[in-house]
Every structure is written in structure tokens, then in C-alpha cells.
Image (cartoon, rainbow, N blue to C red):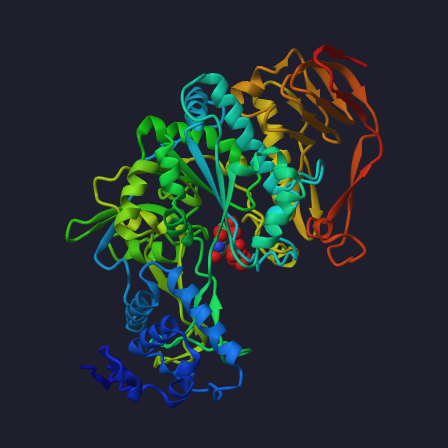
Length: 630
Ligand code: UTP
């Protein structure tokens, strides 16, 4: 027996309720009924699911059979994708959406009943003995790691026409972010295998999460550059799907304004990475092949890998299931704070709390001053930079319970205070850092704080917006991202004993930055601080106007006095000593107006180009020992 009926939802909307059977069509919208003969049994099943979930409006504007039939079938292809790419399918998506929209309407605070406190974690100083020890521990573990780059974001704030990972991280060598990351992973792989011969996997895999906005261009970038030296089999691309948009509090799916046979979709956020790793079987594959760690990172942070070895060492030493990389955070700074939250009912979690939620949370739980700096001059809650290290075993265990789904949120922009209509359609979103929200209290969740000068300089903002950033706050632009690399490399060499001249201040694209010597090295030269320190001896100095590019594993600086540009490339089998006084007119940075379209976009967004006036350039491809002393 079939039973179809028309029910009524809480807000009075008429909704079809279908309980199975063949005669359900009697209550189906007439436009769908007329078209049923076009549909396969699977498509009919999907139609039923949509009706059961109050989505009959999706068929309201369908044409009669014979008109747009292909598009009607394509509609179900899309529904199939939306169903299979979401844990629990569309039914689950709509159910969660209704719950979250109801919470949002009544203004429910997700942190009600929780009290924040400062969790335990490590605070590291670059180059300290502890830092160096952690770096070594991290390099040992690295061969048991897998890396995951989330690169599905649109990058609207940056407004770059290409994909972000194709942008040069710096313009001295023009190395793009993806190449930079891959070269670091390969250097880590080599160093780890050398340090721990015969102890585990010999290749470090890299998964890249893409989206429809970035997928094809990411594939092209890899293919046209021979995967930047990585084996193609080492890299796996996982494409995230967008999710359905929602038109109202009853979670009616939005029809695409351009196509009445399409559901409008928008990105779901980087939290998708967990369900993709789980559903693709990749996580299991990594686990089964003896891997212990998964490291998540983002598309445009040129400094991150300076922090990775030590942070992985912290994970291994402290046996952290989850380790969030963090930077010191000024109170009220627009960066999430890592906090332990304890509920009245005893539940606890260590989690990223968005900066606009942290202050009210503190005020509401016995800290009348809210988010303020401690005596250190920084907030006691470290700033989350969303680079995460998970231990695979506990991670897999958790995902097998949740299917990879993590806590989502919804952020509708209401038309008015009745909160009944939205200004534009909304959707559920999720963030990868929310993963620990569902972990049991026994989970070992910690953090590692590193100074941002060597760990965090993302490229997120376009030049106009960056120029408007209040003084003292980071620009997070292509200009500042590049300058941060030169600054970090200069400071690291200083710590290693080189006299590096002070920077000058300069304004590019309306942003005042410190301009340090343009020092760049390949990861295989300077993977860790101790490896850098071991390659420097005697009295070395580098002037502010200088540029130095080091590309070779065994290049040693000894009594080098550089005032100009030096580019040295050497095969791994070549051992090269570089010293003496090198002087030339060097490479000069020339201002470029970001509005001047005669320059390529990659140049315009940083506000300068490099005039390669003069340099000493040496390439040594043969094995052997060499000395370069002009
Ligand atoms: P961002 O915060 O930089 O966001 O993402 P975005 O979407 O790329 O840029 P805007 O907000 O439009 O300006 C942080 C990281 O998460 C990835 C991004 O590629 C970046 O590495 N991401 C973001 C995804 O992989 N998928 C998403 O749906 C969103």
C-alpha cells in the first residue's frame, strides 16, 4: 500500500510527505508528474527523496515533456552529485541546514555554557636548542608523513586571475607556491630517509584538494612542469564539490538564477578535506602503508615549511593527536584564538574560536575585560594559522565514526529583523580546523606557537585592500608575503652568524614594508636551522642591496662578503665553497603601479619588478669539490 499525503511544516509551508509505494505520484507536483516517463528508476527515486525533503518547488517551472528534456536529465545528474558528495546525502544536508538555520534565527550561541581557558602547548623560539632538537625529531618522522594542501579556494579577496598556487612566492627566482611546497616535501623526504635509513616509507605523498574553480588549472600547472620533480604517482588530487544553496529557513534549495534546471551551489569550505580523505580511501591507504602523520596546509604561505620540521617534532614528542600551528596573537587581532572550552556538563574541547566570538565568550564567563593581552603583551590564546598536524590512527578512528563530516555552520544575511528572508541564498559551510569539535576528552589536542616572522605570511589580499589595512596589522598581500621571505631568510642567516645589513623601509602599492637583502635558497640547502648553520663559517656579510640565490645541497659560505647579486647553482654531487668579496651593481627593485596593465598581473600585485642589472652567476653541474673566490 502506498501512502502519500500533504503535510504541513512548522511555519505553515505545505510540504509533501511520501511514505513509499507507486501511487506517490498522485501528490507530486504536476510538472514532475508529466515528466516522469522521461526519468530512469534511479532518477524517480531521487525525485521522491527531494519531495520527501520539502523540495517540490524545484519542479515548479519545468516545461512539458519534449521541451528541455536533456536539461531535466542533467538536473538529476547534479542531484546525484550533490547526494554522493555529502556524508548522508541531500537528506542529511537539508536536515542539518534546518537545524542550523533554526539556531541562527533564535540567535543561539554555539558556545553557550562553555568557559574558555588556555590549553597546553609548546612555544618555540627559532634557532633555540629546543627548536633544533624538535627539528631533528621532525625530520626523523617526516618519512612517515603525508601532506595535504587545501587549494580549492576562490581567492576572492586577492582577486588574482590565476590559481593562487601558481603565483610566484617571491620574484627573485619566480618559484611558484606549488613548486616551493613540492621542493620542500622532497627535501624533507631525502633528509628523513638519510637520517633513518631503512625505517619506513621512502616517499612522502602529497594530496591536493581542488575545486571546480581550481582543478583543471592545478592539473595543468603540475603536468606542464613535470610535477616539479615529484613522481606523478606521489600526488593525488581530490576535488571538492560545491553544496546546494538555501533560499529560506525551511532549507528550500535555491534554483540557479541562470538555469531553472539547476540547483544553485556555492563552496562548502576547506572542511571538506576530511570527508574527501576518508571517502577516497586515501587515508586508509596511508595508514596501511605505515604512515603516522597527516599535515594540512594552505595555498599561499611561503614561510610555513620553515616551521614544519619543528612542529612535526613537537607532535611526535608530545604524542599529539592534533597539533595546530599558531603564532603569538595580539588581543582582538582578527585571527582565531586556540582555547580550551569546558562546558558546565563537563565536556571539554581544544578548538579554534573565531576572534569575534572569543571576546564575548570571555566576557560572559567571568572575564569582564574580555579579550586582552597578558603581561607578555600578547593574548594568552595563541593565534591559529590553520596549519594542522594530525596523527593518522586516531584521525581514522574518528572519521570512521563521523564519515568525515565535521561540524558545519550557516551564515545567512537576513533581510530584516524578523529573520525570515535572506538577502541572497546561503549554504552550509565547514572549516578544517573545526575537526577537534567532536573529539573525546581523552584526545591529545595541543598547539605549537612559532613567531610569525618565520611561520606565517599568507597572500590573501589585493593591493587596494592591503593598503587600507590599519597600521601595525599585517597586509597579507603579495608584497608583504614576498618581503616576509627575504626578511625571514636574512634573520635566519643572522642567527647563523652572517652579518646581514639592516633593511630599508619602502612603500610598494601603498604598503610600507621592510626591504631586506633578497636572499633565497632552495629547501635542499636549508631545510633546518642546523643544516643552515653547518654551511656557514668565518666572517660573512651581506649588504642591504644584495641578492643571493643558493640552489644546491652542498654549497658552503666561508668568509663571503657580498655587495651585489650572486646566483649559484650546483648539482648535489658538487661541493662548492663560496667566499671572498663579491661586488657588482646587483639586482634592483623598481616600482610598478598596480594599475599599470602593461605589466603582468603577478608583477602588478606586488608593486615592483626586478631589474637584473649585474650579477655573479655560477653553475656547477659536475661532481667534485669547487671553490668560488673571485
Ligand atoms: P582562504 O581563507 O584563503 O579562502 O582559504 P579563499 O576562499 O581561498 O579566499 P577568499 O576568502 O575567497 O579570499 C584558506 C585555504 O583554504 C582553501 C584555500 O585554497 C586556502 O588554501 N580552501 C578554501 C579550500 O580548499 N576550499 C574552500 O572551499 C575554501
